[in-house]
Image 1: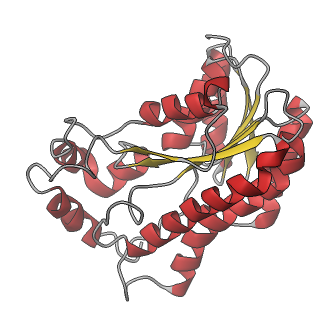
Image 2: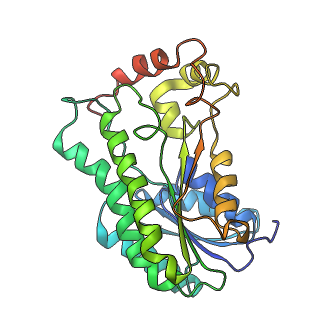
Length: 272
């Protein structure tokens, strides 16, 4: 427990597993009071138990952020539990696998709603509370390099939703800057999350990581470190920005066929 965020009220979407859980655990370890939102409540409850076992402060609420009312519920639960909301980190995403012609309208809408629309609904609900944050409010969205600086085969719908999220971050930053709220994004490459392991398997994940210029895939801890910075006073002068975190993949050619690794694995995921 570092205490850097002692007393800070934080809400995290998609916090039951993967990146969201890693972010929630990092803030709790830094002294924050953390509300973990997750569509599957049992996952969030497991994460809360792990945080409390280490002396952290955390609560959980069931929230499917593809629905406006659940976005409000997450914000309201945080304010009720902790007396306010200072930092909101949007990690959740219902990922639609597939390229053009291979994604149903329902799956496309689920992706757009959980990624881009949810950001709108979350900030809209949190805005009056974050405007009262003693050190200024912070909204951080976890986007992707896919659809913005690179293209992943068979992930067109997902990339489209993430690109819309980045457009929201830039516009919303202007909307709320006069209220002391900053709005920023992180754009990861492949992260070694639970979902990535389900899609690629351990062998595929290792194979992909070997093609990344820095020599590995990213981790939830990498994303958590960036979130801690963007939520801190050290980022006061940053808003409407996005931080690319892909180990250099968007700058250098793939070592050993990164695209082929993903394409082969993702073909099996279309329609899931």
